[in-house]
Figure: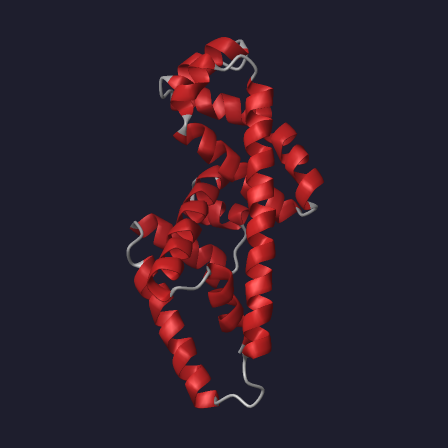
Length: 195
């Protein structure tokens, strides 16, 4: 399947062929990653956004049957993802700065500890809603600080699978923080890391 032409490959992916999607991913991942890195200047962020681009492509795979140039299609999605990320980052950074400026200088340590424990409990409860493998991967990557490669080696699965689980887990946490706490995930994380 590695030597299949682009049109046929897109038709297969459009029909839901996961093997064809893996070929498409391997064929274009580096190009898209390097394109994103021009915007974001960070290897880790570029890798994250690149994974998001391919998740978006898979979610909208039915569109691929009518695409004539995959390069242009993928780069358009990548550019949109970068701009969305940069816009969100700017908004979240502004919000974080305003919250930190408004935060009293003489804060109450017991109140901070109570809030800290509530937020940790909230994260734990939210993570319990994830499938067991996603919970395990989240703990390895975010709580034990394992790299995606290390987590993949420990669990005997691909780095791509680890990345996919982490993207979904972070999305669940982001949505939960926004809907249940009324704050962005970056504000929540900022509070937890500030103490």
